[in-house]
Length: 146
Image (cartoon, rainbow, N blue to C red; front, side, top):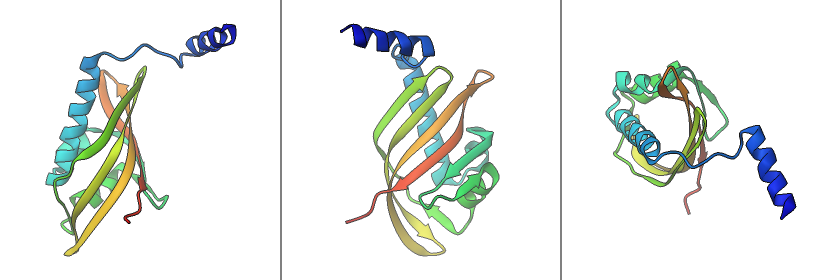
């Protein structure tokens, strides 16, 4: 028991263990994520970019790195049509001014007229800057279809 108390004390001192974030913050981040997903489906450049930090990066399922500009260009391309999708297993974890939003998505749509479907797990990293939460990083991992 002393060992556990020591570990918790060290974690608190390092700022790693924190009280649960307020429900309002969790709801705000969930709503912000939902609005961003809807903007992506609509290919609404202004709404997509409004949620993103200028130093945004995405690491895709193949390990490629995208910048904000290249990520947005890919999403708003007339070659890409994404059907409305839902997120499963959604979770928000907050560490001070950093929030990790993760889940699983099954997505369908068309790319250059060809139908596609994908299933992936993702993590979105948001940072609070100047009083606003902005997404700074996305990483996705494909889940193979059976």
